[in-house]
Image 1 (tube, helix red, strand yellow):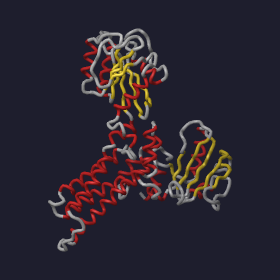
Image 2 (image 1 turned 30 degrees about the horizontal axis):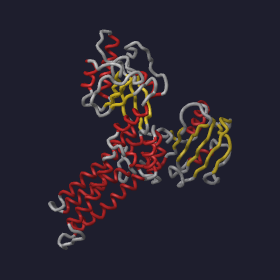
Image 3 (image 1 turned 180 degrees about the vertical axis):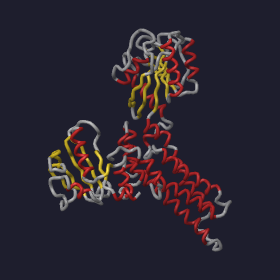
Image 4 (image 1 turned 120 degrees about the horizontal axis):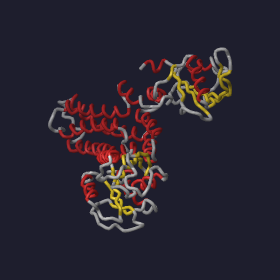
Length: 451
C-alpha cells in the first residue's frame, strides 16, 4: 500500500473524445513541484483553491497548449493530497500531448480508481462512499442514482455505525462476563439482552432484504417480447423505444433474429429483447431464430407474451403458455383497436393494448414495473442495499449475531463474545475498517481511470 502514498499520479479525468475542455489531474506530494517544470508560471507560493491562466511547455520551452490550471493543496482536497488540475483544450491529440508532458515531468499514470482509493486511504471518505461514487457514475435510472447519492452522503455508513453502537453495548456485557466470571455481574437480564439483540437483528435483516430489489434498481432486468408471428411484437418494441428499431410488415416471420435495446421504464432499466415469432416452420433460418427466441424466453426476467386479440388461441400459443408456466410474464392482447380479445385467458397480469395506436401503453409500463420488484413500496425505503459485497458482509454479521442470540443461555460467555466480535468485524468490512488489500483491489479495479 505504501506506493500509493509515495508516488504522484496523473490521469485524464474527462471522457475520451473531442470536446471543449479536457481535464488532466495530478495528485501527490510532488504535484506542485512537477507542475512547475512544465507550467509557464511558478506555482510554489500560490494559495490553494486558485485558478491560473498559463501555458504548458515542452522540455525545450515550446508551447504545447494554453490552459487554465487549478492549485489545490492538501489535506482539504478530494484525495487529501496536493492536487493540480489542468483544463486543456479538448481535442484528442492535444489532450494526449499535455498528458504525455505531465508523465515525462515525473508523474506516474494512475491506476483505475486510484484517486478515489487515495481519498479512502486518507480518510476523506469511507468505503461505502467510495463505492457509491462508482455507482453514481454508472447509474442509468433515477432510482439507482438516488440510491447512490444516499450512500455518497453517508447513509449506509451511518446505519452500519448505528448497528455497531448498539452491538458494542451488548458486547461489553458479554466481555464483562468473560473477564469477571465470579463477580456475579448482571448489567441486564437474559431477557433484556435477548430483546436488545432482537431489535438490532430485525433492523439488520430488514436492510439485507432490500438487496434483491436494490440489485434490480442498480443492474436492471431482461424484458423479452415473445409470441407467434405477426401479432405486433416489433410494433410494441418500436412503441416502447419511441423509434423504428424493428422492421414492421404484414408478412409473418419478418423478424428472424433477436433484437436488443436498453430502455428505462418508470424508475427501472431494462434490456428489452424482440424475438422471432414462434411457430412450426421448415425454413432453416427461421427455425434458428425460433430456437433463439425460446432460449431468450427461458433466460428473461420478465416475458411479455403478445397475442392477437382478433384471433382465437391456437395450439402453438397454448404451448407457449405452458413454457411460461413457471416464469414471470404478462399477457398483452394487442390490436384492441380492431377487436376485443376473442378468448379469455386466466392470468394475474393481463393488459389490452394497441401497439400501433399506442393504446394502454402506459398501463403496460405500470404493470411491468409493478411485477419487476419483490416489494412494490421499495422506492419509499430510506436506504437500499445495491452492492453484493455489502449484502454478503451484512449476512455474515447477521449469522454471527443469530448464533449469539440462540446460545445466550446455552454456551460459555467466551464463545458468545467471540461470535459478537466476528459480527462487528463483518460490519467493519462494509465500511472499510481493517479491510485487506485484496478486497480493496477488487473494489477499485472497476473504477474509471482518472477517478
